[in-house]
Amino acid sequence: PYWHPQEGVDAVISLGDVPNEVLEKARDSYRCPIFAVKGNHDSTVFPDGITDLHAKVCSLGAVTLGGFQGCWKYKPVGYFLYEQDEVNLSDFPRVDLFIAHNSPCGIHDREDAVHHGFDAFNDYIARVQPVLFLHGHHHANKSTMLGKTECRGIYGQQVISL
Image (cartoon, rainbow, N blue to C red; front, top):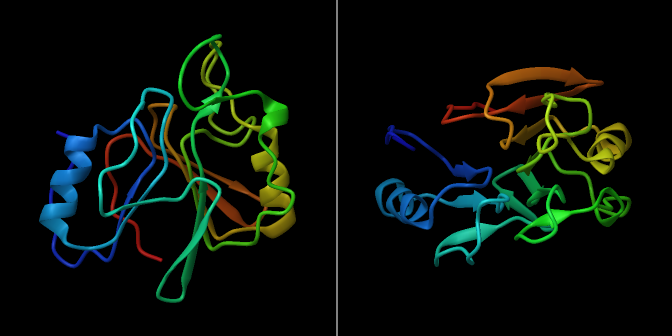
């Protein structure tokens, strides 16, 4: 239910809360780079062959990718949970594609205590204007422009062309 192989895929991107077994199956089936961040329901390191993009920048051909894991700290104990002031991207370089588990603040937020975005993501987008900002966490497929950046929430899977 998590993925369906397709021909001609250049990379697989995981936005978190995806079991390692699913990532391993995708790695073995697609035989292409997999870039990922951890979500708030994840607790282990990535399997071999999965590139962890948390606070890192990588390239895929001419496209630069960067990312940030987790969501805001909505409970006292758990993995990949951050207070707003713990998320700082002021020195993070510009990338074309930013992947995150959580959304920018006010973008696709839900009316509960768990699904609110990070202010630092809004600041980052305003400063560098990546082409695309992908996030999970909110269990909705939505797209919103924030300046020149398309912020796309993904639930399930989507094929994206850059």
